[in-house]
Every structure is written in structure tokens, then in C-alpha cells.
Length: 371
Ligand code: SF4
Ligand code: SF4
Image 1 (cartoon, rainbow, N blue to C red):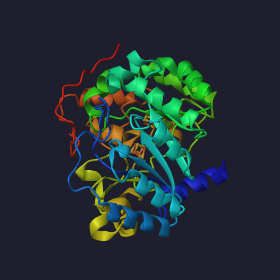
Image 2: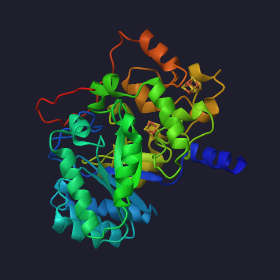
Image 3: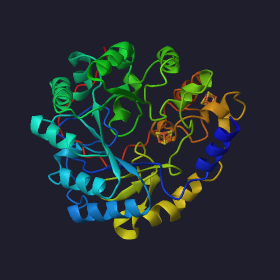
């Protein structure tokens, strides 16, 4: 326990290089998920070129960052997708990429299966087509399942099935576990944050307090289910969940967006959390020298959570969830397991919430509903 704490203290002060670096290759996407954290849809014409992308990988390799998370948008939409990931693994930078699976046909699956140091996460938002398609669009579930079938036929090995926990999907935990088991896949659950287009659906779709309690118990019994540390606010309920149990934004986590802007975490794409651009300063300098990241590495105030007996486990929760629901950084997490976040939200009900910036959504109507 003592070693765990001192490790956490070190991480809180920030490291020379991020442990969890996410790079969104493009804002282009062929789906229009209602909760998309990066409001993706249209390609930004200024996204990094192939040569800029390769130079960034070289810098990442020189910083001894041994793997990167690639996302989007839909990263496989980029024509140079394979060239970029093959360059990364050639530089001994492992790649984990998130995809909606629509581009993983039999040929792509075989090519992916031939690449070392590659991990794939296929996203669904329900254990059946009706539930998942409500979030991700009609036909998206079947396409994701086809991608999983193709990876299995191509002997890719163990991939991940990634699910955002909504009020609907959280009711299907056992079904997700069975689905992952049927493919020999790992299950990864992440928290719905009010980021990107998620800000529009968060009120209707984030799990209820009771659902979060049930989720905590379910996860406690299944340490093999991956969460990317995204439910540490639930650790206030008792024994901590596996993970660092801290907000790593700007300390051990960051995001590089398609045009090279560096943000404190994938869920805070907003000018307020922008640290600099890799085109102007290079990634290393942004990570090590930005004023924003330096300030995030300073000890923070516990604020309204100071008197909470669970502060050590929960640390007041997620900065992004607070920011995009209009709360202060010193307020409790909006999903505080003791309901303090709901009280804080109620007090600020009339205040304007920050809007995500930038927004690359396609201008199409998308239905938002919970069962
Ligand atoms: S802001 Fe939230 S999602 Fe981002 S690193 Fe912190 S806790 Fe995680
Ligand atoms: S009061 Fe604050 S520290 Fe305590 S459980 Fe709620 S959000 Fe976490």
C-alpha cells in the first residue's frame, strides 16, 4: 500500500513522458455516435500530413514512449493509416487503436493480423444491435460484429471490445462479458463523459447512482475487465478498483489531436485545456514545458470534497466531467457516489455549460434516446 501511494504521488507530479498518450489521427468519421468525445465527423483540412505524422512518431520513440493509443474520428479512414501504424511499430512504438470496425473487411483483418505490437479495440455500445445502434447509428453493431468475425478468422489474436457505460448498456454487463468470451476477446468498459457531443446526451444517458453502485460491485468481482482507470470515482464506495485511481490529465495522460494540438486528456478538448501544438514546439517541449501541464502537476485543492472520508480514493473525481457539466474543479464529481455532485449541479442549473471546441460534427440529424 505504501509503495502504491508513493507511486501515485510521483505520477501526480508528472513524468518526463506520458504513460497514456492518445493521438487522434483524424476528425473524419463515417458514423455519428451521439456521445462522440471529439465531436467527430468532418476531416480537418489542416490535419498532420503523413510526413508530419511520421516525424511525430520518431519524437515519441525518442522519448521512450513505448505505446500509443490511436483514435479519431475513425482512424482507418485515413489513406495513410497502415503507413503510419507500420512506421510506429517499426520504431518499436506499440499501437493500440480504437475503431468502429467498419473498415475491417477480410483483407484488412489479414493485414492487421500480420503486424506485431498491435492491439485493436472495437467499439460497440450495446450487447445487441437495437441498444448499440441507438447510440452509434443503424447497422453499426452488425458492422462491428463483422469486424470481430474477420479478426477471428484472420487469427489476429486477442482484441478488445470497448463499451461506454450508458444507462442502457450498463444493464447488459453479463451479456458483454459473454460476447467477449465468445471471441476470446478482452472486455473494456469506459465512463460516459459529457465531452464532445457527449455534452448533449450526458443528462439522459449517464448511469444512475444505483447503476453506478451495481457497476462498482460487478467490476470488483472482475479485475480482468479493463477500465482504463475511468471509474475511480466509484472507488469511494469501498475497496479501490484496480488502477492508479487519480486524474492523470497533463500528468501521465494527454491527447494529440489531428492538427497537432496537445490537450490535457482525450476528454477535455477545449481551449482551456490546450497546452500547445506539436507543429510549433515539438511534442517533448509541450509535454515538459507547457504552463498548463505544470499547473496541473501542482497539488490541487480538495475544495468541497475536503471533508469527505473517501477523498483519498476518489480525489473529487474527473476534471472533464466537472468542467463540461459547468461545475468548478473544486466541486465534487457530478456522479459523486454520495450524491454531492447532484446537489452541486442543481445549484448551478441555470449557469451556462462550456461548449466543446472545436466541433467537427457532420450536419446530420441524430436521434438521442434512452430506452
Ligand atoms: S479529466 Fe477525467 S478522463 Fe481525463 S484524465 Fe482526468 S479523470 Fe481521466
Ligand atoms: S464528496 Fe468528493 S471525494 Fe467524496 S465521494 Fe464525492 S466526489 Fe468523491
